[in-house]
Length: 177
Image (cartoon, rainbow, N blue to C red; front, side, top):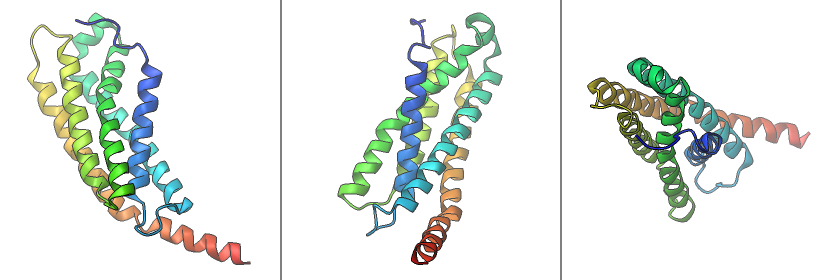
């Protein structure tokens, strides 16, 4: 068992939120018009909502699978472990941003999927530090949830990608008047 896993919890949440916001921004970036504020703001909002969704689902599943850990180490331990594991989103979001900016690759979905799966694995490893022996249910349910969240990202971006274009068109119509 290591020191206090809750040290810097607010900073961990902030970095994870920024990571998902970068994913959202890159995911809705329009090639050739990368600095369009409508696409950027919409992507940032989608990324923020997805941060909340991932945090809630991972905390719920980790909490259900590790009630004994909560009794032993306190209720806050699961939230700390989840946000600490989700920090692995940040390097993938930075790589996605750099690939979009310099290489003009809009492959945010690939980076999101890899980041979420890595975050789930990291959460399992963090939780395992508080057990004498690993629990198989952590190794099954959290990566399964991560794969479903990855699919949810890919599907939702596919459905939502038309909205910024409509908002941009509406903004153009109202600005011309």
